[in-house]
Image: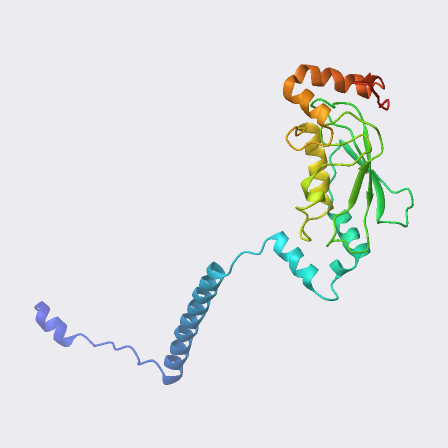
Length: 225
């Protein structure tokens, strides 16, 4: 028997047509998947277009809220303190444990001109914080271009550059930097600034003498440990 005859005599097996319910289920499945893909694509496009919000913007938004926590100086200070991560070269103390608006910060640099000496600062926060900067003062008489003999600190963010979006961490970082890189171009102690500009070696020797409690340029300084 030839192949053609076999094909004529072979039984024809036909697949049953899918039921109408199965067709509807398949159609619904593919429509659903298409909608999900479309929604995911739209969401991804929205995320790409959405601007990223910085920590400063979030803080500014909270400061602008009429009854937000950052309108309360105590709550704002507590929030700032909780976010502080002090390095091993700094220590914060509270003379009155219940008073968060007045505290002390001790900085003991581990490098630079002021290495191994401890410098004590007081922080006083008024009722208009964070719209007003904290008042920061050094309690010791030290030889520094940016700190005068009365303990006033020359740090821009404590004056004209202060913004409510800044925090206590900004001030702490700024103070630390003053001991790592004193700035002779924006001085409160002009004698120390000129000394630093003229000779770093002479400046370093005078810093050591002042920290030891000796007289430098006619001024008796506090002995530091």
